[in-house]
Image (cartoon, rainbow, N blue to C red; front, side):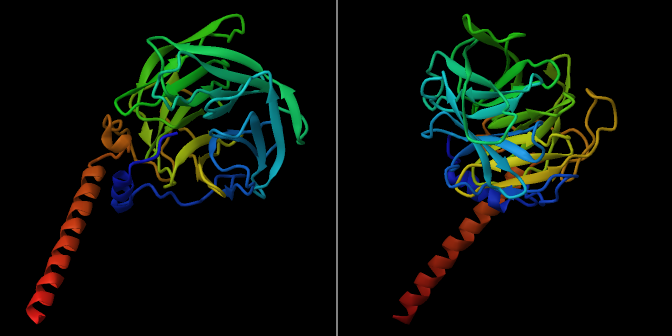
Amino acid sequence: MRLMPVTAVLVLALLPGTALAAETPGAGAASFTLADPRIKESSGLAASRAHPGVYWTHNDSDDGPYVYAVDSATGRTVARVTLTGTGQPRDVEAISLGPDGQLYVGDIGDNKNGTWDHVWIYRFPEPKELRDVTVKATQFTVRYEGGARNAEALMVHPVTGRVYIASKSEDKGGLYEGPAQLSTGGTNVFRRVADVPWVTDGAFSPDGGRLTLRGYFFARTYPWKDGRPQGEGESLGAPWQGQAESVTYTADGSALMFGSEGANSRVVAVPVAPASAAPGAAPAPSAGTSAGPASPPAAGAAAGTGAEDGSFAKGALVLAVGTVLVLAGRRLVRRRRRSDG
């Protein structure tokens, strides 16, 4: 986890039409608030397939080997899974459900900016019953081709079962592909297959035809074909969240659920329009989606704001003008005080 620069937050707040998506849920999906006081740094989301309306989440760090099942109807935790066989997690950042019915937990964060020579993935079957339980997880050791990386996004393809990790970089992050099958017998090398912007989480659509990536200030969805994201993708109307850390599709693919860190944080449902073509084709724009492809965010712009079509420049201009007016007002007040004296 890395906090957003204050300046970027101020600029974002002034952007005309900044992505403040309305909480209009898709069919069978609704926004909810995480009510469990133990969940203070929700950093990943995965929709359950075994338990409709339930979402799996976890804390970012300093919590322990725990995964929580939350009922979206009430926001309450209905189960806590304690993992054994993993040691002490360092920086858990993501969770994803595979086609094998198992949950994959990514202990892939690196707050030392890419200095750990390996990270871990933990895997365990999604519990059939929702109750507090302790399970023995399978642990996989991961290294990146080309050296260590900091990452917060892990996605398991819902058809092939292949695991992908998106690294987090102010310059240019990468999408890394794992081996066809993860192995406990040695190190699993993840190889770079595409460039991506500053990413804090990602998710595949249930049919595997789309990949959605989110950052602090943006979200984009890409057609997925031949194991790669296609083109420049489309901009989505992601909600404004103070520490935007997670995203997942609902189990039926009708909506995207956007989450953030913080006590009593809000998970916001944003509807997804049905694709106008077969899986792998470009998705149709959804509510809050720009009509037609847009260029990817400028590398390093305000720590990966993803501002597009000049909106970042407009916001910066508004901030600059506002600052000038405030300073001018203060000078005027001081002059009046001197003349009155």
